[in-house]
Length: 279
Image (cartoon, rainbow, N blue to C red):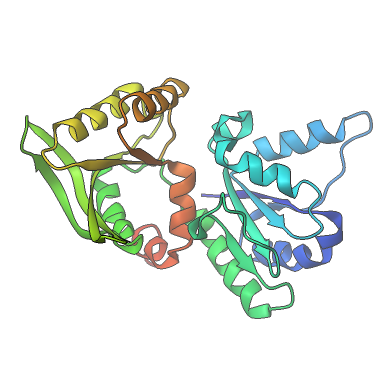
């Protein structure tokens, strides 16, 4: 699989980004680093088309990034924008001495010391694995062991597959637990996890409603987690919002874009499950 990466950065950071671009190209990644539109072509339209033709957008956030605040405020809802709805994965890179935005969790961005060759080499290595992250031929059976390992890496405890819910004939793909420490002591939360793999298409409203029914049928107060290599349809996203607000059912979603980001932060899992012997 050949992956194309679009590098988004402020002009003042060009010298910091250039060695990363060169290293990625050497690793076999197609990179858009710097280009000019043809005469008569609007620059914004040119950039938009280049992004739409990419698989990943690497956004370098530094003091010089003029649209930094706009990006931070927009990031949680990027999926609603046209080019993000195409499944393009956004990977923010936060330069040193920059306050990490509260909207980003550690598994959604990379950190980079501008003068650290070690940091640059580490980032380039992780990004070089992008070309192996191909879900196109993956089905749920092959995705399950990856998700099992990933749930453990994410801090879930006692992860178990094929959990039968006592009320009804419901079987969730996984049950897992997290622990919270409050003023009243340790609180254990139960998560019912559903895994959906698609070679084409997206997770539908039915998938969201099914998970909500699983949670409602559970004798133990539970939260839901949907993990998919694809994305939600617009109707499924609306259904999710309605269920979480009106029915007070807590359902979280890890879609294909977020899943890729998680795997890039756990690169040994990419080597284990995606890279074939001899590659």
